[in-house]
Amino acid sequence: MDIADHEDATSALNSFKATTIQSGHTVLLRLPSGETKGFKVEKDATISIGRVGSFRANELIGHPYGLTYEIRGKELTVQPPHTLQEVEETDATNELINDGEFVQPLTLGEIEGLKKSGVHASDIIKAQIEQHANYSLKTEYSKEKYKQRKEAKYSKTFSTVEPTIYNVCDHWFKKDQNRIRDIRPDTLSQILNLANVRPGGRYIVVDEASGLLVSAILGRLGGEGRLISICDVDSPPAYPVMTLMNFRKDVVTDIHSSLNWATAQEDYTPVAAVAQESSSEVGKSERHRIRLDKRKNAADTLLNAREELFAGEFDALLIASDYDPLEILQNLILYVAGSGSIVVQSPFSQPLTELQSKLRLDPGYLAPSITESWLRRYQVLPGRTHPTMSTSGSGGFLLHAIKV
Image 1 (cartoon, one colour):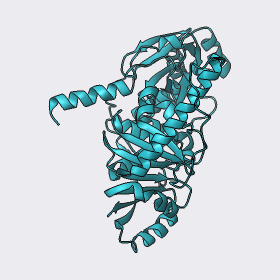
Image 2 (cartoon, one colour):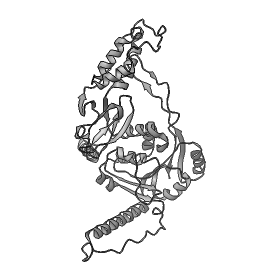
Image 3 (spheres, one colour):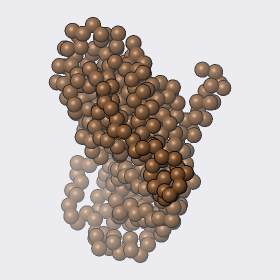
Image 4 (cartoon, one colour):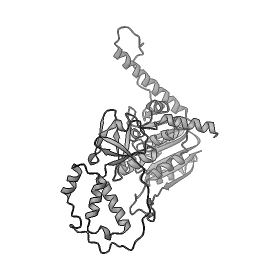
């Protein structure tokens, strides 16, 4: 790709997703505890973040993602980036520390009084440290952890999180991994890689992971390509994951269409649209004409999506569904081009091992293989880099094959 093509691709991607927070966006906020929550940003509205505080949504509109703010009253002040500092080793140990109930003379009532009087969180933490009986006996690492715990408890700061597919997937995995079929960010990256999802590609997806696959593919397409999703509802599904991506609706409408299992059958005859009536027909109210136009547009969109699906030559088929994967393949494999990829995800290995044994007997599939991604997170800090004490058990299993 030359420089001009790269600039065009970057421009298309930027036009597909807003680079700043706009009214109507659903924004992820990272709280002092490290938890992320989604909030709808509406002009002139007030956003409440529980004990952290509340502020006017207008304070965020027009700002880029990734900034850290502190709530003061109802207004926000941008905080400078937090920098890591080296922790010096000392001879102190924690073995003689007795954390009883009297090591902190500052009572809960006194702390609440300080908060109500408007004392800054840093001053409250400083007062707790000064009155802590055993603070000076702690190691430097323990002192740092103590400060972080108190900051998570009393700080009124938060950060806006850029709506990348990694951040959104990580948020949903921590929030409710069952709703996205246990797909971790590393598993999602494997799915996109195995299916060779790229700008300008054409893909079929069966997504029962709350729209995670649809969102990831649309993000990779960047406004260029085609995506047809198959679902089991009559109207286009409301994918909760997609609301956090803040895609432009007009661009999504151009590259993404949805069909249900009935309309995806070639022998299905769509219900005849209401008799075509001219929008300028005399005697009809404006509301009635608008309703007829909407029905006509919906019928035309459905017809065009069916024709495009039946024309075939799609680059890949991606499946994350509770239905029998073999039946899904038998219904949709006809529309995948030769050498196209098939990727099937499941939280369990059994459905995929059964599918693999059947595909091995079919000469129409090449090299069906099953993989399981494994992830170990690390804490990366100066002098304190080590694996985290707990991690997720599995990000699900993947079957990949190539259509001959």
